[in-house]
Image (tube, rainbow, N blue to C red; front, side, top):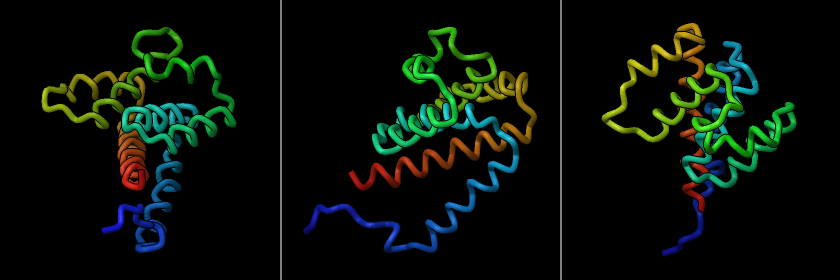
Length: 142
């Protein structure tokens, strides 16, 4: 049996075409671009998706994110480089990426609500869900 990666994009192109449209819908809800990059990059780091880490790091830099903050994203909760709003979003990202039954989602939501509307929280949640989906698809080709 062959161990070569499956070309998902070729095999089910209609699924991937549909998935691509989700990002435009999420973007319509005004999630800050820098936050968007941080969330996608952090989830990609946690999921060990080298392709996505490289892509999202480049995109973040292209949109003006600093190397210093990107260098410290892996330790965001131990440094002062990130705002309380960004830290709330990154905590949410980690909770939804590394599922743990002991996570207190209520406390995380309360922290999010100090910085985001419910619509923004929903857009953030969709962003986290989509990057986790893309990471898993990409990792399946390793």
